[in-house]
Image (tube, rainbow, N blue to C red; front, side, top):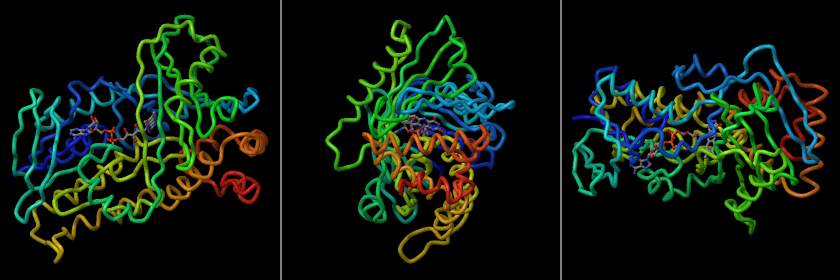
Length: 405
Ligand SMILES: Cc1cc2nc3c(=O)[nH]c(=O)nc-3n(C[C@H](O)[C@H](O)[C@H](O)COP(=O)(O)OP(=O)(O)OC[C@H]3O[C@@H](n4cnc5c(N)ncnc54)[C@H](O)[C@@H]3O)c2cc1C
């Protein structure tokens, strides 16, 4: 019997490839008909991820060496390095490359198919699939992996029943347009640019990222507190139009419009498995909301789960409540690898984005940006936002970061 993976984003595709290379029989299912459909992610990753997570070189759209931040009053700060600090991926191409690697490793790929439901039984799991024509099919498999991203299509019910481990769920809603910038303005090249403060958007941030072939990714993400009456979609679209007009980008052809959500609990205490169902990637809150970043963490979760799942396939070691001992190790291993900094970063995300509105939020930001302008190099900002090394800024900056001042 095989393993069935629902969802062929970065997490599901990477897991499928690793398991197939280890000799497992794997089926990978995605509701998308092709890898380029709704490539919602702005897909910035630090340069170290290319090697650490074997990101296919073909999916790299642009390299960047500078951080550029536009402050609440419109002024900008730039931190540059001699070296490349990161890349902007073409998310559709990333999926395509990962799908191809999985298929070449022997994975059965069902694109345009949907996983409707899973029933975990003592000897196997029963899965209902829906083909592109709407016909239903039943399959018996050993394990099912929920890699359906923030939708958590399959594991949601067991997580929600424990109220996400009494944890808070942070939710970001993003919109992104891809523009064709034939004039190829130098302002946006080799940098990733962010827009912070109430003159751009409340409870969120905007970005302009360079891409290959003179394209630009321009977007906004809102992380609105639960008691707010603001609507993410209208805030994002209004902010986007204002930004495009401010930088005279509103006359450029828009070649793609996409969007999506990013959701994570702060402490990641929700269950990661339920009988023969186990979750990876955004489905178990690996995305970090501070920088709205989850690709490398999703890949990490796949790498951690793969050997444990292989072991579970070969083991009859089931606990009294029907859970697999080996899968219980998975949640602990993943939390250990993401580390305490990941949790601190998500706490800071909540403080920062929920608190970032109006004058008070702007003043906090000015202090933070002025502190960073005086003290930090481009490498320091990368260490802060990608390695979550907040303690570097010790007593001076940490209180601003966590919103105490
Ligand atoms: C606006 C925005 C900007 C972002 N920017 C960045 C960034 O700059 N850098 C970064 O690292 N991360 C970024 N992220 C987050 C990142 O994209 C995700 O963390 C990452 O894609 C998670 O990977 P995943 O494989 O867990 O899930 P996903 O990539 O969401 O993949 C899930 C897959 O499951 C499929 N699926 C869903 N339900 C079913 C079903 N029932 N049956 C079959 N298939 C199903 C979907 O079609 C999808 O392909 C951003 C997210 C958003 C929303």
